[in-house]
Amino acid sequence: MFDLPENLKDLIEFDATSFAVTSRESKHREYKQDLIVADLSDYTKTLAAFGNARGGYILFGISNKPRQIVGTTSDIDEAQWVDRLKQDFDPEIPIAIRRYSVGGMNVLAVGCDPLINRPVMCKRNRSKPVAGRDGKQRDIEIIREGSIYYRYAGQSRTIGYSELVQLIAEREERRIKTFMDTINVIQKVGVDRTGILKMSEESSSIFMTTETAKGLALIDKGRLVEKRGAPAYVVVGNVDVANVVHASLPEADKNLPTEAASILRPTIRKVFGVDTPFSPSQVTSALRHLGLDGDGIHSVHEKKLRRKFVTRAGIEAVKAFIEAKPLQAITTFGSRASIARFKEMQKKA
Image 1 (spheres, rainbow, N blue to C red):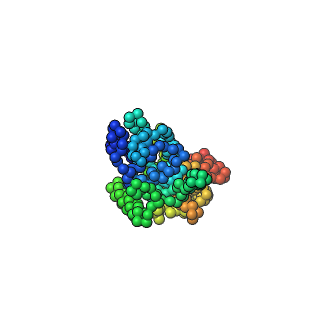
Image 2: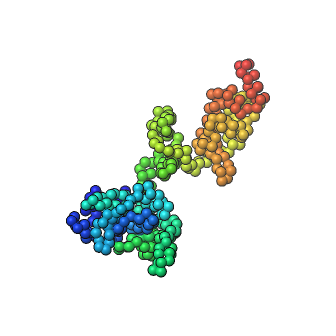
Image 3: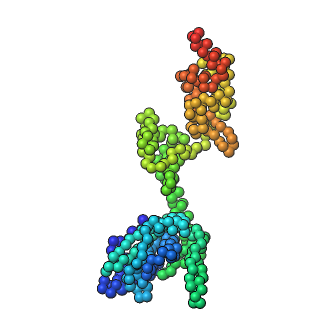
């Protein structure tokens, strides 16, 4: 966040008696005699230009001819600044605001740092009516949709070719560096123990592979999720932990429901008898009952190809369910005849 000093003398040089200002406007500084709410987009344009260049600030309450502290008679709150900046430009321009009192006069400073995600672009057109020499009102363009503004010596205007090329090159360099730094972190931590946190104002999402998700326990909004004594992680705020990025499945886990049914049939015959049928749809019924269908670990749905795979973990889970709770299992996926036959078997046993 842009840091504005506590003392105005740390921003500009001025005479404490006459209030004459010796510091000129520059690439980083602009003066406004007063804050006029109707000109708010004029000011957001200047802030966007600062953000695309090397940062800077606007001082309200300082006249230009002569350069002197005269004080501003109006003010608006930070929310109005933020709202107008969001309406006019993207990406977001974080700003800092500070108010100074000099000789009973108020000076307002609004500034920003160079933006990390520059260039910031104008999102909309704005104009204002201005009276000409003939007294007629004319609309004068303030900002134009699609424009990129840049701060030059003492003025903010549409960016030139060389500065735009430099901004794009710097952005790509930052992206490559960020990507390489992330790869280095993943290498140090381990691919199987790494997740990605996507942050936003509304909510955040955690992305991870199924391998990472298997051993993860979370405290989600005050609810402890325990998993065999594994460490628990606190999730603060509105975080979606349901996003699992599926790594490519090993061939041994690419079992179609028909193949999974064939693998499980020996267990079915052993537990329920040789006459008990077991179909692919019954595999799905068992997985749904266990809450494992389409969870990305026991069963994986490929939406584009409209296929479903039952992994080795899914087959083992169904097998364990059948062996541990046979009556509940056959009731879940068996026909009436199969259920009756198994109950008769239990009576004879």
